[in-house]
Length: 176
Picture 1 (cartoon, one colour):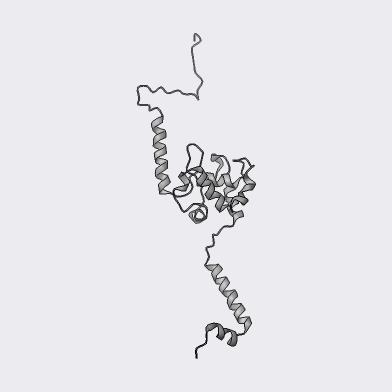
Picture 2 (tube, one colour):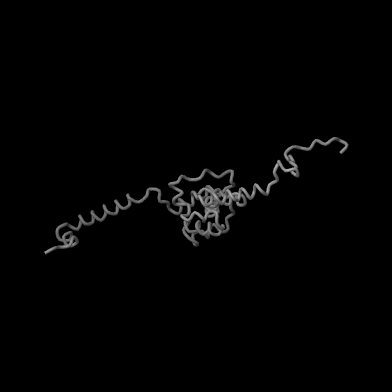
């Protein structure tokens, strides 16, 4: 006659040993979890750092942190800003959690949602995003944007190009 493991544990092993076994199992499971799991307050603290003017923003986070901050879908960072905002809302705890940032002006270090959008987004030319999340798709997209921007700028080799040095005062003769 075969007995189940549960029945053996309940009859042969004292209850305190079962409790210890369960406790050890939980500890082992926790130890197996990645050490870099971030809480929502920790994620907010990271993104507060990026809610500043571009020149004051720190370097991007390490890859081990980006795993928790960046979207799995590589199209999101260079897609519509609303998609970036949806991603950021999600990792910051949802719509209810981010309501507290609605009336906070960006670039003051107090708006984690704005910092997240800036960190994740690839709209570097028009929205001062930082493009911190790895994305081959968005790298290609950004190269295309750069090409478009370059083609719109006058070229110094063009005959019609006239460079103006606005940094120096003009030295006109008095007769002008």
